[in-house]
Every structure is written in structure tokens, then in C-alpha cells.
Length: 589
Image (cartoon, rainbow, N blue to C red; front, side, top):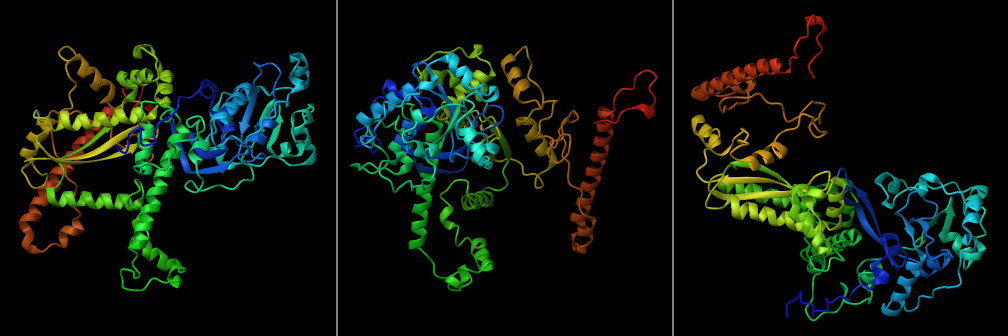
């Protein structure tokens, strides 16, 4: 039986309608474990990123649900903020909650979930003060700014500061009791005041307040209690005893790449899976390093408690990588990239200097098959040409796993079907190396080094050979819009540096750190750095021939720089208007 087969206790029950209709905050209200994570929205596309670790804290589900009011009209909604502490100003979630849906979902879990049988729901808790809409308007004045707020994740500054609200007796009494009798909806009142607080028509709850975080691998069925909607039966979770064992990495791959996108569409579950996988890798690698533990440092001294208490000695151990070697399997850590850098240096020693440095960025906003594929997974159809920017962003955020899969497949196709194809668009590829990075907006791109067979080496071959090689594979000319309109459109949209320089261009207090706009040239030229005269004087007299070559290169480089400066001044110099003198001209920016 394959390890990833459904029969290996990976089967999932269908999500009942009572749980499928719950929003993010309603799901948090019925979860017995709250996975707190600082999730922030990135610029432009509003893709999500996590800052710091994921902390799992037990939640008082029964107390919290019984303390929240039950409006008499079924359509009555509550505005609720989920906080880590009731006195913090920042919140984790802010959504509109339908208590009817919450109670129905909790009743479903009580029947099906093994960890919810002991939950007792107080059906008698009602909010009698809300039976008359007119009376409600007289008693509660809803803050316009907060009532108009859309459901959203807390931003970085709000969630990080966690300022404590004023705790004066009068202020607290006014905040807890804004003209409403709370005792009718709190069971018991003393416990509710520690968990429930509302003012201006907005309820603030902190169901995990005062509870200690728990270890991810120490609590049985923790995954099913943190995500009860996905695991409504409480079975077939990560810690399930299986005939064929699964590592966390393989297990979460099965969940995220499944045709059932209940996991891929949940951003909290994505970050939870990432944190659990990395924690398991760190623990396993640490265990291996402890078994291989060396009792002596690289300089032959025995590692003792006294040495570990000395700051300087610990820094030496870190520099010698004696204490960070276990972090090599963790992608993104200094030890991981140090190992990768050594692999790249080994490739350079064997293959020589790389020929091309290439950068490929994801253009998911221009890929109809990605957006239409995500909607097809959700059972819906959409026309790509009818979508605006915001609609495309919403679709991409709904399933980031599919977006990354499509990007990975495109990179593979780029290398196998194009770059290394018999057509050899950039020459015969001997080897390549690339690194995946994520831009500030959250989209991936790759930086690649490519080694081409029989490519001329700059500094070792004749300049004319380099000219011919560059002109053969690289062009700065736009394609003809008549003969190849599609390629002309792509180059014009994504391969031309914008005149409106971005923030990335202006790093270092310059107009454009990439040097755009660049002057047009009728042919390819090579420029060389000007050698340091002091270094030339220190050379032996036996190297007179090499010195002459460097002097010639220096002379040619200075001439090229002088010519470029003159032409750049002409390009940037504004045209003089009628009657405008030299003194009144504005400086070029």
C-alpha cells in the first residue's frame, strides 16, 4: 500500500453545511485550540505572510459561547473582536458573527467529534435587550468607524504593539456596561467579565486569556481541535497511528495537494503546516547532531559548561558552525544558505564562470489558466477578461497552493521544454543553478546562473568573440508589431523599464540604481573598470606586458565613460523655452 493512499488513514469526511458556512471568526469560536499567528497583508496584491512563530493556546469554548448573547431575531448579527487578552487594544480577528451558525456548528461537533462530547451549550442565554430594534438604537450607539469596518486581519503595527486599554474603575465600568443589563446574558457573571467585554456595540472576547501555550507534538488530536471544521470527526490527523508511517512533510503535502481544497484554501492551516514541518525538521536534525555530538571544538578544546557560559566562547562556536549545523535542513536559515553557497562555489570551480545571470518573475495576474483553474477547483466559472485587479487578487489569495504549483510547473517547462531543448535558444546548457525568492508583494521569482558550452569567457577571450556571442543571443530591440504582435506586446508590457521609477529603483537616494534610461548604441561594447594606480606601481617590472594591457584597457574605459557622460548630459538637458536664459533653466532630475 502506498504511504499516501487514502486507506492509510488519510480519508476525510465531507464537511456538513453547518460547519462549511462558518466564517473565520466563527470557526475560531468553536475551536478548542487557537493557533495564534501574526498574519500580515503584503503590498499591492494583499497576499498574506506570517511573522514569527505559530503559538497554540487552549481556548475556553464552552465559557465563551455561553457568554455571548443570543439575539432573538435569527438574522441579528454581532460584531466581535478576537483578542489574546481582553485589555489589549489590538485584535487577531474582527468579523460579524451569526450566533445561530455558531451554535449549530458546535452542536454538530458535539455529535461527531470525539473531543467535543463534554461540551455543554446553554440554550437559555438570550439577549433580551435586543428584542426591539428601536429600543436598541436608543440604548446602544454604535461607533460609525468600527461598525463600517470590514472583516480583516489585524495589521502588523496593531497586532504587535498590544497596548493595554485604560483600567480605571469608572472607565472599565463604562466600557463593560454601556447602558445594557449584562447579567441577563452572562452565565456566570464573574467569569464572563474576564472573557467578555463590549462597548459601542462591538464585543471583544479573549477565550485563550490566561492559558499557557501547549506543545504541538504533546497534545493528542491537537490538529483536529485547532481546525475542527476540516476534521469534524477528530480522526485521521497527523498523530494518527498508521500502518505506514508518514513524516509531517509528506502528511501536509497530501493534505495541501489534495483535490479537496479545504486545507489549501485555509491560510491559517498553511502557516500551521509550515511551522509544524519546520519544527519537526529542527528537532530531528538536532537529535542527529546530539548523537554525533563532538565533545571538542575545532581548535581541540573540550566543550564544557564554563565555555558555554562565556559569551566570547559561544560566538566562536557559532562562527565555527559547531552549534548551527543542525539548522542546515531548514530552508532559509544561515546554515542552509551557507551549505548552498558552498555547493555553488563547487560548481564554479568545476564549470568555470557562469555565462548568463537570469531573473524570471511570476506574472500570475496575466495567466488566465491559473485564475480560471482556481475557480474551476471551486466549482465556478469565470472569464479572465472580465476581471479587474481586485477580483484577480481575491482569487489568487483563495488558493495560494495552486498558484505556487503553477509557478513551479512553469519553471520546469521553461528549463526542460525551452532552455534545454534542441532549439538551444541561449546555446547548449551544461548546467544551471537557481534560487527562489519572494518579492515584497509575496509573488515568487527566481535568480538563475547558466553555464553555456563553448561560451567565450570575458577577460580570457578576444573582445570580438564576446561581441558576437552577445549579439547572437541578446537583443535590446523591440520586435516588429506587424510580424510578431504577441511578442511585441509581451516585451512592451513586461520587458521595458517604466519611466515612473519604483521605490526599488530609488534605493540609495538615487533616481534609478539600475541606470535607466540608458543611452542607445549602434553596437555592443565592453567597459572595464579603471585599475588602481597604487596597485600598478606595486607590480614587478617583469609584468610590463600585462601593465601595458591594463593601461590600454584603462584608457579605453576612460574614453567610454567620458563619451557616456556627454551624451547623458544631452539627454537629461531640458529644452530651453522661448526667452528662457541659461540662468533660469531648471536642473535635470
